[in-house]
Length: 284
Image (cartoon, rainbow, N blue to C red; front, side, top):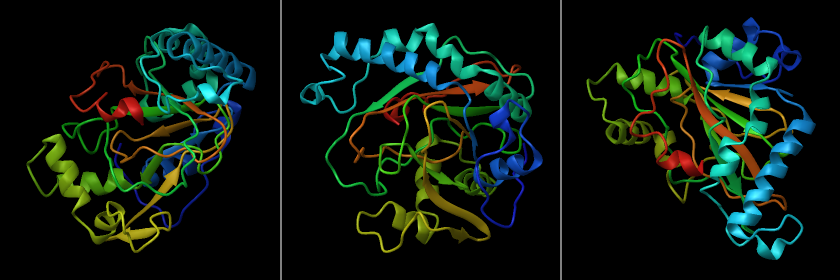
């Protein structure tokens, strides 16, 4: 999918809420920002069942009790293997999300499970845009003008600003695609670091003492970028381009952040995680 420009920031809601295909405006949003939201992709009841399964494993594996905050000592619990493969999460891929994925990818491969289990407990810290660990989860050998995969981020809990929702650099996929036209290099770390040094805005983003607010829109040689948080209601799903830069957020709120995330591949590509997939992605 070629990345086309639009003239202003637009909302992320739309007809996908009702199980219909993404419309032209939503496709513009995705092409410009690399992010589109599918509200109410699965029901609140389904989200509650997914949370129940997750809390059950948090209790058995990590001794974390839903109603006892003193047990929430593991701020980023991992190795939640039972939750990862529990079929209750298959409700994420209901009609609204299937329709949106079909619009973006055409025929796509149904995954064996719903991917990473992302949990961030309240940390008691003040929230701020992170300056470290900005990355993508796929490398840069993919064709820049052809959308062969997307990443989905499913909210199992309501997520308010500051609550640990994964911060993303909207528009960064187009910055990366443009950078790739200037070099034959495709090494993951090299390209990532080159992009993060390529403009004063990115250099400020990765500076602990930054001088600008990265959540305010800026233009990098005509390409708009800004940092956004993934927030919303339980049952919402975000779809992002595989080259959207993202990082790890503090949970400054009082409730755990619980999400599922994985790549969805176009059918003829198959499920092909690169060397970058699953490194930082386990803690997004």
